[in-house]
Image (cartoon, protein in one colour):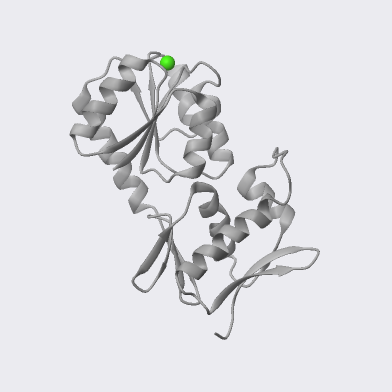
Length: 225
Ligand code: CA
């Protein structure tokens, strides 16, 4: 599994990273909430382990932001707090599971396996032309070729592929992919459409295009190669 560990206690992070690596998992570590937000937007993970208390943003805020951004990666929250109220807060914010420190390492492994299976099982695919969007692998597939997408690219592709042929406005794409409180530049949509077009080219897909609809937004449509 490819895992993101968000943990500010250096010793805990080292121990977990070593233990999980020895089990054959690939583990990236972030110590700060802001870093975790950008890391998960750039890299696709199977499961994220998220500490509740972080030095900048707390874990629950990070989690809320991810869910608002459409990140569906299973998240296991780690915390020293065990009260029912806090567990409920974590789960409501979008955590898939919850483990109270100190925990047994085998217990952690078992929970991770269960989460990764759940993540893998719940995912549909959508096809437009010859190109399939595989939510399970967060990738675009054409025949035997496959390119992986970052979390943000996937969220955008998901909008396009699940509404194949429809014109989607820039503002709609902004709010569904970047969130309603996004305050960056609106041309971020154009930039990410560019990334997806590059990936379609890498797949050699000539029968689907992301077409700009002037003054409105974009649509994914089948074309004659
Ligand atoms: Ca902590």
